[in-house]
Length: 193
Image (cartoon, helix red, strand yellow):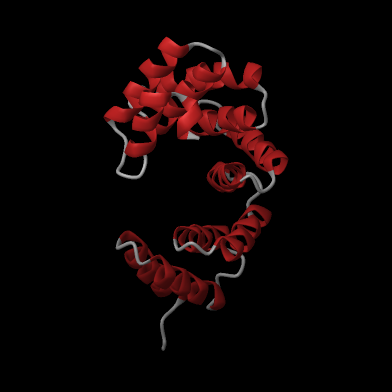
């Protein structure tokens, strides 16, 4: 009852680490209500917890609030931009956020990959390819970036390079990505997407 905003945040962090995302989101909401209204990080943490709990519309509102409070915070711009692109909900807005994040952190491989993927998703393969290659070079063990690189190589007709990139992606793929990547290795993009 007498917990401070810092106490509620610490509790939310513990719940998030234990993958109790709904409960973590509630703890972060409590922290916001107890004096954290203008703390962009609390809104960001709540938004990511809600997103991981499958509550995207609520997550979107929290993430937008975090961006409004911290328009130059690359972590927030990158997360929301990537989420918008991956959901197909606002590809242009997501791309613009990722471009801003990239200007703030031009050498971050995750941001480079996300921006390259945004260009790919919007059909701009010419701008996407050098970014995805650069991201894979910076993070050669990155499963997602190698999968993205394989996808663009396939689209460009570079089948051998696509399979090579997908094989690299398969090495470190998590349980959710492994079947998708295996399907790409077997059938290319036709059956996997």
